Image (cartoon, rainbow, N blue to C red; front, side, top):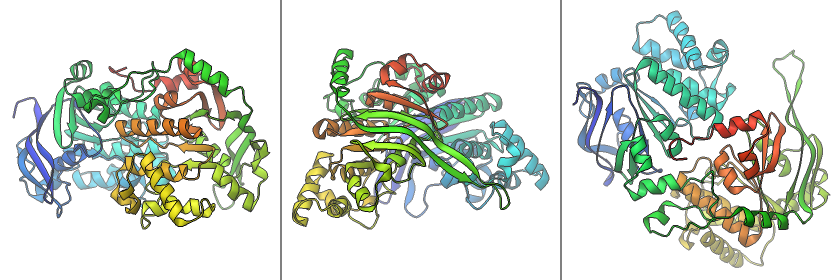
Length: 561
């Protein structure tokens, strides 16, 4: 191993049963370096990083060849006892989902303190003091309060900071960050990236940063490894790899993300690149203007007038209840065939407003007019009829599907509820037709949700929504957790369905690049109020408020912009 190398992986192969998922990969991590590992789900990024920590599931997986050298140790051959002294202390990991990685029954402070008591000689009081110092270091507001708080009592960004504090507690030589900013707001994501870079500069630790977001990796990493189907297809410095990518897969990943400058009619996917079927057709500003003149010459499909949604919070048994407005005096119009992009940070009121429009959570004040009728005043059967016209595509399709029901039946269920078509046979035919329209096949009708990938499950969620032929669809963060190429496929599908069926979308997301690509109008929300509303391109190019500017500046652009 070279003198400035801290980790050396050579010809590493990993199998799950008879299926080899990692094929003889080799790369090095240097001292005081940030190495990015990029690729889609299933490329082997996380599996190979779990092997470094000895966390591969014991009974179903094994390392079939190669070595992982860390300092004087080959991590594929050391005993569990030696590994326990390395794991957490010298090599630490920040996991992708902090809510499922933190113990919900223990306070945040206790969980970090536990690491210090395990790996250092600090006393209980000393470990507590060090934990609070760590919370200060990762810039958690009111670190003493967070120390005594349970995970559910703090925000997603704060939970991620607790995970980082836990990972750096023992000043590790290597920190593995596995998708540490996925599904976080762009502003929180920017803060986390800045924090990791600052900590790396201070402690001189080496970081392996795993993500599917190339714009993000270009802002943080020194070198990049690109993985595809268990192989390393390319590796090199950030500037070389992004400016002159050699492998077609790397070029595909770079170009699958919506451009902030031009609006392509169809986003290129990985398959398009691999099959050389990409299209460069763009929507010109003139075409967009004509389209908008036609759109806005008709009466609005939906009109939201001074809508409020207040919640009552009570801090203690004898404290006075306080009212909190999650949505505060919001008004806007939505036209048939339009896509309204709704953006803002977590807690700004985006999803609450969406739920009020869907009548899933009633507004406490104001009017919501759908085709001229105030739907806030509808009762029982009238709301059931409205459900057919206004539908939602959820963020996590897996949790919105019944794991015990085949997907075909799940899609048929709302069709039956609304008495569409004359028989189950006819309904089944329609469902199979819809499955084909969203890029699935007839065979998928009989399969269960766990048998599909994340992108396929999102297509099933879309199929279930489309089955009712609604007029208005609320897409609530419906592509935020998807790989960049799967995201491109789903966005193309949503635009294609909009053109075919004349759908109207409210597209809720924290990803401004995606919203700008999809939206005709853009509405920015902050603390329950509308911060800014107008043409998506105009707002992006000339934001009027400081808050909108902050959101736009937080979009990762890096070298590839």
